[in-house]
Image (tube, rainbow, N blue to C red; front, side, top):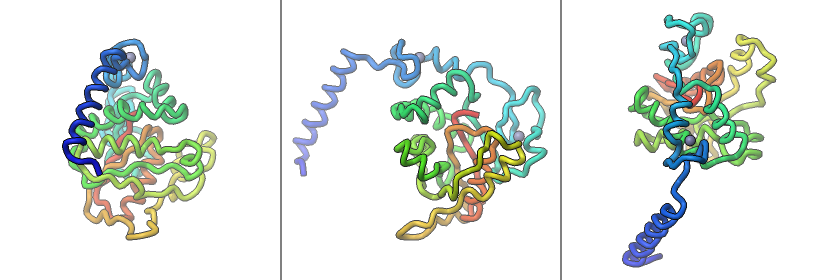
Length: 246
Ligand SMILES: [Zn+2]
Ligand SMILES: [Zn+2]
């Protein structure tokens, strides 16, 4: 136990140390590493958010021409109410998300989480619960972290809403998604997620609650929809899905 004055001195010394360190080494853009920035620099952000395209009002899919609902929404009954991505999953954003997820650059969780939190503030500012899309146990062991959980932490912290990091569990390994047709992918994902039965306590009750589901990327919407279906089993009356890339 540190006494209060000692703790204050310790905090002050640490703050001074951090300031001195920042003067010596000003933070650089975590994307390009060239320009000074907290998180991403303006040039990189402009590249990420370049050329906003019209998107489907229901699933957030990029459209060639505005039209509601989009082809995917006409063909599929998604279990979420709406899905949104902050920016197009391509180019620099795709590279950054891959560096974060596959390259283990865990420090990218903060600036990417800020992008997710900005979107959440605009699209779903008052959820009752924030839930990340779970990854398989095997991936979790190999990677050491669930990228969606780190992003969901940022979202929950910004909105000041409760985070349920372990509400869902991935039941089994998905089939080879890449070789399936779109309809096949959605069928493959259905039944992949379930409420996680905790060792102690009980499964969270989302009865009548508005749940915000967070992932790094939404592509076909199949994963988000399967998670939303599991959240509805837990009682959720509304599920919005949000990702950095779409
Ligand atoms: Zn940059
Ligand atoms: Zn759509």
